[in-house]
Length: 205
Image (cartoon, rainbow, N blue to C red):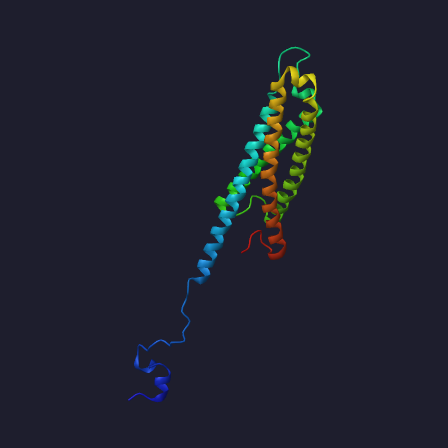
C-alpha cells in the first residue's frame, strides 16, 4: 500500500509516475509571433521596393525624354540644354534614378537576407535623409521646368516646333510622377526612423 507521501509525489516511488497537471506545456506562440513579424516585415519591405522601382522608372523615363528632346539641326532649332530649367530637370531626374537604383539593391538585399545593407542605425537615417533631400530636389526641378514650359507656350518656340514643347511637358510630368513615388518612399522610411527611435529597431508591430 502506498503512503500518502508517495501519492503526493505522483507515485514516484512506484515507478513511471503521472505528470503533474500543472506542468508547463511548451506552446508555439512565441515562434508563431516571430514568424508573423518576419512576414509583415517582408511585405513592408516589398512595398518599399515597389515604390523604389516606380520612382526609378519614372525618373529614368523623364531624363531620357529630356535628353532626347532636340529638334532640327540648325543653330536656331530648340534644344533642351539651351534652357537652364530643362537642364535642371534632366540632372535632378538622372540623380534620383541612380539613387533609386541603389535603394532597390538595398531593398532586395534586406528582403533576401533579412538584414540591412548598412548598419541598421545608418541605414534608416540614410534612407530617410536622402529621400527627403532628393524629393525636394525633384520637386524644385520639375516646378522650374513647369514654369519654363508655360512661358514657352506663348513664344515662337512652341509655335514652330510644337513637338519640342510637348516632349518637354511629358518629361516634366514623368518627373512629377517620380516625385510622388519618392514621397511615398519617404513616408515609409520615416516610419522606420520613428520605429527605430522608439523601439530600437527599424520595424515593430
